[in-house]
Structure formats: structure tokens, C-alpha cells
Length: 275
Length: 286
Image (cartoon, rainbow over all chains, first blue to last red; front, side, top):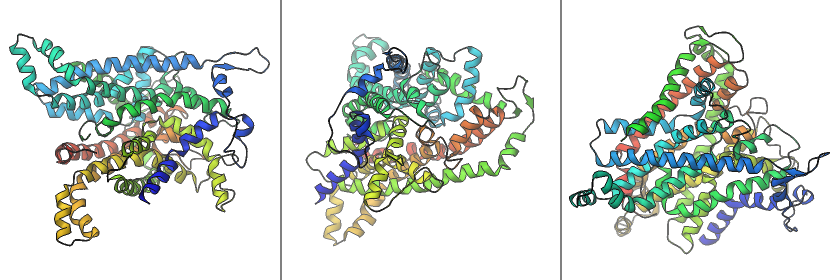
């Protein structure tokens, strides 16, 4: 009885995602059929349309989607590389040294993450306008580094805290410098935790919308911004939109399975542990 | 070596916030080619005297009042359901957590498809159970529908945190309670609840802050409409800044919002850092 309940619950919860995926595999006719079609002949036309569009009155040609996809990849990957590097230095320092005013700094860092993005975006927009960073990769990457920083520092500090200090000390007795001890002794131990942190940051950067929406232009547009173009529109081409969505969320779903061990830590910034 | 991290935050958070604090005392619009005029606290006074902004706050509170209790109760129920070990538990948990990891913008887009009043699956399912002609995009239903999206995404968060709390209760306490012939209500009241309490605090505070900040999913789903029936405070700031171009006023409004969030953040962080929650769960498995 209980298992039945769990089964039904899981099915109901995942239904919207299921419905999205099946819609992306339907023909235009099946998609809008009322009552909805549960059995249908799946097609891949919508996915082809994402990359190759039939423009009315024009010769068919490739869409801009690959560009947006590459932008999303490029911006997310660059930003996590930077945030992990800078965050690792900071979190290791917080974990090992008696930084002056440590609690205050940690508190400050975490507080930056809690601020509503909508409150920050207004001045950042002016700042970027003056610095000519609008529609610029660097501008977006810098902002993504900022907004993942608190998470990266807190999460990785948790992992470093779990590695005994004796390990650093032993390596330094063996003649390694502080940096050497970090690289040879601590880093290999912390690697899986750092990887988990990186994947979390990657997902958050991949999902980010508001900053990208306000600050990007055509050249630097990311996938969520491209998706948002349906806002306020009627006559949406749902086939292409649902197929785009499936392509956009699939990596996140795959990564969620990799992260399952760390999910609780992740959502509480490393402060509540559990396996 | 904490300097680079702090520096990035100072440049991209604190400096912009100082800037917008200054801006909030000026009459300024980016669309007009005139220099800002200092008007003191007039922007703030105008906001307090504007009934439509009070409406935005009320809508945000309404949204919170629907989403938070349901997320908490459903989350607690599901956590109790998943508490005992069973085959495939890990898979079920991971599957349930997927909504939380998805981009709010993507979720908003496909809920628009689900909610659509002509071909959406929701209105079809409702018509099957006898409710015909359900229109979600109306003054009456738009906030509950938007809240449903939030509930779908974030109930799993509650489940995960409460599950951590439940697992923290040592088994021998239940056994001892059984020996004392405590019923399940007594067990819940005197054994489970006191241990889970700090985690409930964390979860509820965190969700309160996040619900107040919700933007992406509502922006794509309703764009604040119909009219301004789902114009949450974050959407109002967006509109003031990037649609009406009342830049100074938007800065002032965002500051009021910011102070509210900062107060909540402080309560939350003190709770998170100072409470024994982390020691309770440190050695446990979910």
C-alpha cells in the first residue's frame, strides 16, 4: 500500500517533465489534440527544426540555436573554472588559517548570495553600460563568478574541514611547501567534493536567466534567454520550444544523478551534511 | 588568499549597491537625456504612498501564504513516507529532486504549455473530473497557479531537509518511547519534533526568502499579468526599471526590498550557523 502511494506520487511529480518530453516528440496535430493523445507515432522533426528551420518565403537554413547553446556552454564553463580556482584558495585559507575576522568574512560572503538579483541588476547595468561590458562575454562571466562565489567558498570549506590538518602538517614535515602540501596531499582528498561543487556551480550558471537577459545581446545570448522570447507571445511554435527545452534540461537531469550523494549538502551550502 | 574572492564580491556586489543607494535619492531615467536631479527621500515617500506598490507586496504575501504551508506539509508527509528504507529509495529520492535542479525559466515555459486553456493538459484533466472551462490566466487563479509551480519545484527541498532531520532521531528513543507505551502522536510530539525543529526552522526561513525573490518562472509564465494580478514585488522592480524607466524610483524600491531580505537573511544565517543543526546531522545518513 505504501509502495503504491510512493509510486503514484513519483509518477505524478514527474508527469510535467514526461509531458514535456512526449510533446517534443509529437507532430503539430497530435500536440494540440483534445482529448490528449497518449499513444502516438513519435517523430524527431521538432528536434531537427531546432537546428534547421523552414523559413516562410525564404530558403531553409540553419537556426541560431547552436550559437546560443555554445554561448551557454562557454559562459558556464569559463565562470566555473574561475570561481572554483578563486573559491578554492579562499575556502582552503578559511579552513586552515586564522584569518582575521574569519566569521565576519564568511558571513559577508554568504550574505551576498542571499541578495535578490533584481536589486543588483539595476546598478550593474549602469556600471556595465559605462564600462562597455553589455553584450560582452567577460561581463557575464564575471557576474556568474560573483553569484556562485558564496556557494563555492562555503561548500568547499566544508570539504576541506573534513580533511584532517595532520595531513598538511605531515606533508610539510616531508619538505613540501604550503602550496606543495595542498597540491600533493590535500587536493587529491578533496577532489570529489570539489568536482561536486563545480557541477553545482555549472548547473546554477547554466540555469541563470535574469543577468543574461538584461546584459546579453544577440552575440552573447544564452539558451534561457532564447527560450524567454516566447514571453507575452501568442502563436508559439510549441514543437520547437519543447524540443529546445528537452535539449536544455537533459544535461541538468543527468548531472542530478551524479550529484545525488551531495544534494543535501549542496542545497544547504555545505552546512548540513549527510550522505 | 581570501583577497581575490572578497575583491570580486566587493566590486560586483557592494560597489553596485552603493551606486544604487545613491541613485535612489535622485530623479533619474535612463531614457531621458537629462542629468539626475537630487530629490532626497522623495522616491521613498512616493513608494510608501503608492497603493499599487502595496498591492505588489500583498500579492507577494499571498503567494507566500499559499506556497509555503503546502510545501512544508507536503514535504513533511513525503519525508515520513520515504523515511523507512526500501528498495529503490535512492532512485525515488533522486527523481523527486529533479524539479528543483531545473532552470525556473524552463519550468515556467513548460507550465505555460500545461496550463494553456485551449490545449493544456491541466484543463483537460479538470474537465475529466467535471470542472469545465478552467481559466488559469484570471485574477482569481493566476497566483494559485504560479504558486503551484513553486510547490512543484521546491517541495522536494523540504523533503530532503526534513528527511535529514528525521534520520537524526536515534532509534533507541523510539524504542524507549514504545516501552513507555507512547502512541505515535506522543512519539511525534516528544521525540521526533524536538530534534527536527531546528531543521524546520532552516527550511522554512530559506523558502520564505526564496519565495519572496521568485522572478524567472513568474516572468515567463504570466509576465505579471493579467493586468498586474501576478505582479510580485520583484516583477514590479523589473517593470519600474526596465519598462517604465523610472530608474531612481526602481533603485529606491529595490532598496526597500533589499532591507527586507537582509533582515530575513540575518535571522536565517544566525540560525544556520549558530544552531546545533549541523552537529545533529553531521554523522547521519539520509
